[in-house]
Length: 120
Image (cartoon, rainbow, N blue to C red; front, side, top):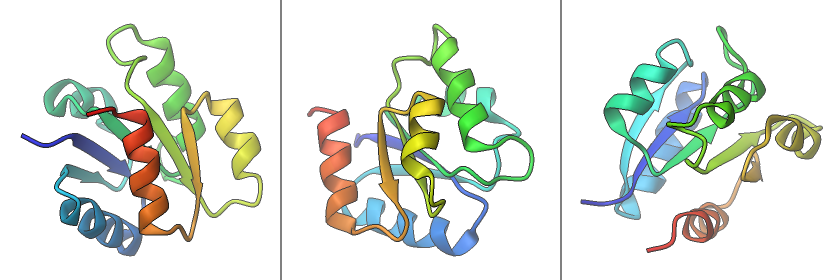
């Protein structure tokens, strides 16, 4: 079984493109348009990596990452903060993300980041 990745992004086009890229690389992918079921998603899917956008309707990415990083069961899951926000670097630091990608991103940069954060 491949590496499991959850993508949280409220933009359906970004979800589709990112899902397609990750599937092409052989990852098992779960897509979510919000974080309303964050704990359930993490417990049931058990991802090895999370891609987190910032602007979502119920809980923003910074809040979601901060929550994940305070929970013993989830804190070791690497989280890549990915956003088109001009302050993406500052937000990633504030959130406690393990990595960041600016949108739009290159598929090879995404793959490199995943490989760095989830060793084979």
